[in-house]
Image (cartoon, rainbow, N blue to C red; front, side, top):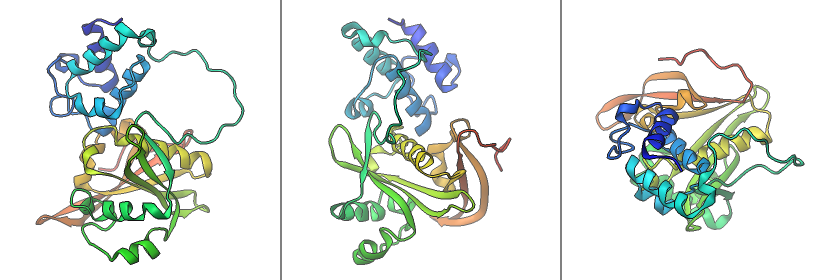
Length: 276
C-alpha cells in the first residue's frame, strides 16, 4: 500500500501540479486548479490503484487528503487496491469487439423518443442552456422534437449515470463531411456535474466511438471562450485549440471569442502549437 507521501507524488506526476502544492488539505479544483480533464485523470489514477469510486463518492471528495483516505480504506480491505499503476502487462488477445460505450461513471445509450423531454429540458435549462446549442434561446418543443433533434446529426447518445440509471447528459456528432474527413462534436451535462471532472468521461467515450466507427481524420468542438475554463488542459490531453473567432459570441455585456478545438485520430499529424 502506498504511503501518504507516495500517493501525493503520484498525484503531482499525473496532474502536473508541483509537488509542493499537493497537500492533504488542497482542494482539487480551487487549490490545484484542475479542470474537468485533470480531475478525470485523478479518477483514472485511483482506478489504476484498484479504487473505483462511484458517482456519489467522487462528487463528495474535494481534497487530496480525501482521495488518499478513499485509497487507504479500499487498500486495507481489497487486494485489488494493490494494483500497479500503468502496468505494461498485455491483456489477453481477443476478437474484434464492439465499441466501448461505458466508462466508470457513465454509459452512452441510444436516443429513443422518450428521451426527447429530457434533451429539450437540458438544451433550455438555466444552468446549461446559455452554454449549449441554443445559447439561451428557447425554441418550441415541437420544433425541437420534430426537426432539431436529428437534423444534421450523424450519431448521438443519451448519457446515463451508471450508479442511478438516470439521464445525465447528451453527446452528438453533427455536420459530418466524410469526403474531407471531419465532423463536429457537441456535449452537454446536467448542472450537477459541472466542474466535477467526471463530466469529461462521456466526451472521451464518444470521441473514441466516432473514431472507431468512421474514418474521420479529426473532430471539431466549438465553444464560447467562457466555456473553455473547464477544458483548459486539453492541449496536453488529446484536444488542440485550432482557431479563435474574435468577438464572435456575446454574453452579459461583453463580446467573447469562440474557440474551435480539434481531436485528431491517433497517428495523425498534430499542429506543433495552438493558435492564440
